[in-house]
Length: 559
Image (cartoon, rainbow, N blue to C red; front, side, top):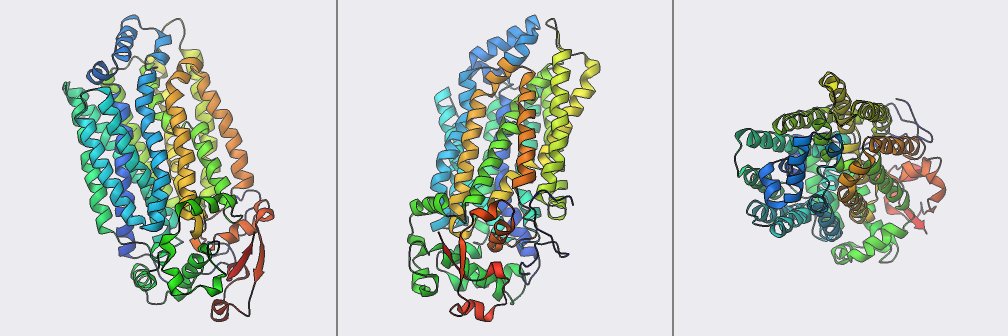
């Protein structure tokens, strides 16, 4: 594996040298719970796929976006290359597409409170209920207002899901398998996208006037799946300890690890939970069980205040927010779903043909993410990003050149260029699915300390969703204005992202989630921002019976 600047040395076991190795292995129970938890992402993937598909259905456009429908019909008649880029440019359509991101951004703030005080499992149940309500409103929509309200409620559910599910898997998974199991979240999201694309294609083929209602209404199936899966899974030991249920947490930890010998890992969870109360209480060593039982009473405001002011959280917050920024502006983020149909339309494909290729792209994303789930805990997060960025850059440059030279004098691209365009699109999508799509979720979910994990991921997702809202609100207008130059815009940001990842993103492969502070203290840049350590070896009872490495001792942090 090629290491970037400042990476720590990896021990032969696959982790950072000096990090404790916990007992236990991946069990059927963990695998089952992880699959159920990550399957909640099907709802988000299905909605993303359905939205792009129904936006191409003439009956849907004619009812809710008549101006777009009229422009699309005019483009078909005159065959204008200008309208190829601009036929979907509409403030109303952009508002419809972007509303889910804005709603999810708002709800993720409340989701942090729920995940911290009521647990990851309960938060996912609320997400399922909200999604079911939103689906009913969208499928039965009689006007644009009703359609928007349904999409906004689904957005609220999405905000709860993306807040709770990645944290759930990161906490329940053995640290050696954390990356692979977290990739299932993206696999299920893309599986939902595949199902949506196939349903859209089928409805378009049949020409059913109410095909768009069928597409939107079938979202109720993944919404119900989300709710049922959330009812079946157990709570994470980390969340139970944080809320004062130590005995139950230890039993669940023994169950999911497949061994009774979980003392070292459980002790680390206790230490992390007690450190998380330090800013609201006295010293860590003075905390007792009664104090721990009052953890759930801490305000969500204090958690957000801590994530912004705590020196141990600031590197994680900066890394996470920059990853979301680059995800949006370097690879187009969620906006790419709208660019693909437009690119395919440059060949004057029929609507059904474009939907067919969209389905094939969705299948490619699923297969690529499954490959990535195998590689992430072998190559590491950083190496995957660096490698895939190279291929994505080549594809963006290739698309810009192909479109700038191929569309001239009001004509569509020659069909002889179709294989080349499809190659660029497929390689770009596959590279994105291998790296950015899942890692933009995985990395933030594993690098925050327990005290700010919910608030940290919530803040990260807020940044991501606000950027998504911005791009979805402007993406179609940008494509109309920039035309092929938009892909050069993304390529330029991708170069900047590559530099940032090489120098500032540490490798987290093989590091237990409650030992992540070691990574920051050994990184060439971030270590200078970490607070000084005050290690009380004599007074710490945990230090006396645990053989902890220097960076993993029970410490008092001086801010």
